[in-house]
Image 1 (spheres, rainbow, N blue to C red):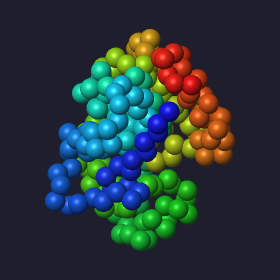
Image 2: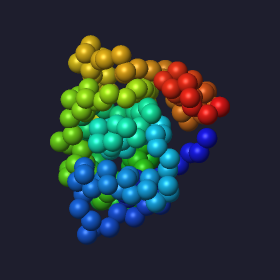
Image 3: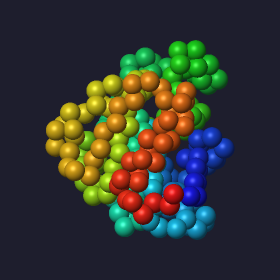
Amino acid sequence: MRVVAPDMRGHGLSDDPEELACTMDSLVDDLELVLDRLDVQRPFYLIAHSFGGAIATEYTLRHPESVSGLVLVGVPTRFILLKIVQRLMVIPDPVFSWIARQIKVALFAPQRTLKRMLHSVLISWRGDERVQLLRVPTLVVLGQRDNVFQRERYEDERIRSSSRSHLTWYNLSVPMLSTVPSAASWSLRDWMGKAAPALPR
């Protein structure tokens, strides 16, 4: 099995050039470019976290034939910040990043990138509507430590009550993704095997 783990624009070691447009289409284009340059064989499983989940959802809606299954980890249906995080966003870096670490708010990009993506793209993204348009097997993974956006946006009952058979929900009662990564990995692999038995073993 081949695993590719790219950093989203402005996250990790990826640059965030100011001259590039920041729109949902351009972020999906970024993902397409990475997949093409790395010659990723289709179809594949797409696993995404937080902001990346919105982009992965839009990629899957654009190219359903390319995605065997989609996994959304800690992705709210609306990216509405908690009030404490809203107040933090007006504090300049590096103070912003230091305070965020002290109160254990998980950040994976500098403040400039976060604000740009949030205000240009993600605030207007309607995951409560877009996720329901998916027609590929989709696993939604929630956790108790999703503490940046409003909690009710992670557990949107409108999606749960109207979910079709291709949507599976998995609540992580402990932070397994960081403390017991092998258990989380096997859980994902088990789901992928059920979603498509042809997955290489």
